[in-house]
Length: 196
Image (cartoon, rainbow, N blue to C red):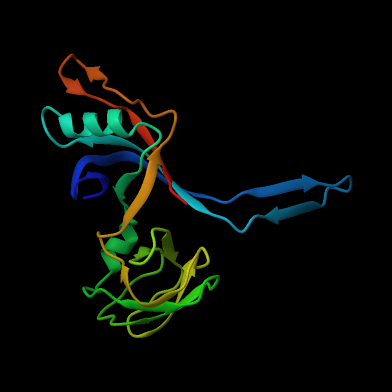
């Protein structure tokens, strides 16, 4: 189940529409001859925008989280995996990764099935979320995006529904409670910005 997690439990589940956005600063200019010049910064973060469904009739855990954490405290988010990834993955192990900071490839061991490209992963020694850009079904090299922020050496790689993103509620997210029909809590859409 994907959504906002408090004390290891999802208290607000993501609902459609769900948008996972890749944010990379890019500068575009068109010259007088209409040729395009593009430059890209070497930084990246993920943003998730989604409607959410509180998972209890009173929704108090989610309400408290919205109020207490506001826009300034970290929020744990169970990173939603792509439907195609979920339907194709067969790996049940927790693989181990080794790679250098700045690399777009890590060496993986301990795989016992397919980890398809497009899988969100997190290495246990840091909080950045990466996405695989190649398939892997046995030990060997694995392409990732973005480049590795810090080195991994014999580090567990979370690649199933255990990928937790550390994020902040965006400024547009309601930090209180809205009700529909006087009974149902409806926080509307939340925007979560990855902590980088």
